[in-house]
Length: 205
Image 1 (spheres, rainbow, N blue to C red):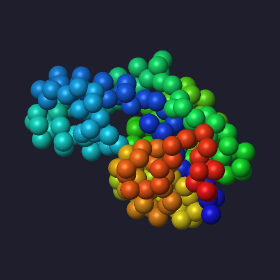
Image 2: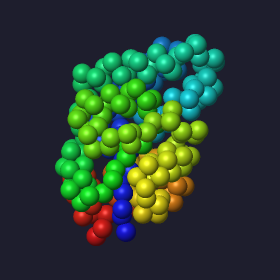
Image 3: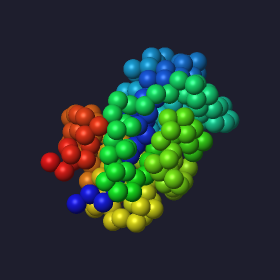
């Protein structure tokens, strides 16, 4: 039984990954590791900024102080005027709300960036205080911490929560938390949902 729905943000609710990947590629390339947006997505999809650091430093050496903070600020600034919802995201949120199920959003984005995306998209109304970034838990995805905290905030056992993800990192986190997991991307080892607007019907089929 599904008693709560826990959403990832980027690539699930917010169509933000293309913009973020382009900026990451530009910043990492400037450090001496040439990447385009596709390459950045392949390497960093689903990772938090702290988990990106050792990968980058392994290629270019020590990063400048506060590099992650400056990158996050650049991404946040650009997304504030350009982020769009993923197709079907608004309908999915409305359908979950109409079903009377609590919701949370769980993201490896930073706290300020995540809050901004929810506010700009108008999705914050669905979550209230149940908006969780990697900065709100001891360990980011793929650890289960984000989804365990979100399930507790919804007052629902993890086994009764449906996690909606689009990356192997996020799926691993949801499974480690003991949640039911669906993916908007096929081929990641869990049930594929190809129509976010029909999320609940698809998950309960």
